[in-house]
Length: 338
Image 1 (cartoon, rainbow, N blue to C red):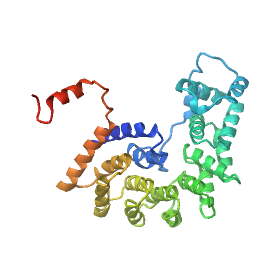
Image 2: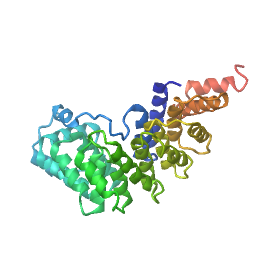
Image 3: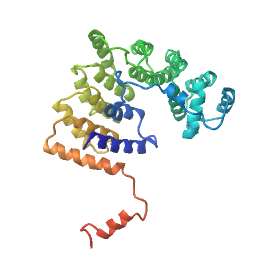
Image 4: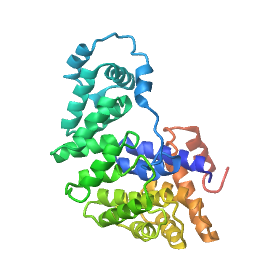
């Protein structure tokens, strides 16, 4: 199975499931992102969406910033269509008061879907004042605002101030959502020294058995990224591959790819995941991608191919009632054409 075909099949399956909220954003970052180059790696390169948003035509309506603010008071961002979101994003890129209102709403939003929609918009705008506001939120005295700021900051290129805030929060923070956000922001602007890397690995490893699965998941992935030798990350990832929580298993698969970890034990643990009853389709897709870097025995190869076909079937839309393929299958029956 080629990387492109694996990625395409898994992406189709992911989008079908994510529409119902069954797969969390971590799956994108830790599994899909790892093999298409998006991931949460500090060496990833982001484009500058503000310039893109500012260069887009505003649409047919010509509306002032004040009018947009008035309309925003009764609007729900998550309910806007794609074209409306584009128009609003363009308007906010041109209007500082509108951006300020979007940030204010994002900081106070407790509806998960609305918060995600507002975060997507602010990440698309990505002007300096939006980044500054995210940093201010991340340094707030309120846990909910700290978490919101950190989740927004990870959508921007690595930022020294965000990195410093994250490092400062890790030893003292107790809120799981903030801890997860801080772990995601351990992305220095420059390649860290060996001593800094060792100190960071020692700090991150203290969270791999945290009570919250999201914290455990992000710590596993960041450990694999910081531990370049893999001496600490490899056994931690191996343990996480058999964790009871699916988020942690997904992160462990992503960590194998992000950290470029290789061992016979890791391979066997991932092959075992492919046969695990009820295993998540995103986890299995990530395992297929990771196993392409490992030599497989004939038995392991057979499991690989069987899972590949399973994912391909899962990513194919069901034929509508009366579809000609169903009719043909019914006519042929189990013994072929009659």
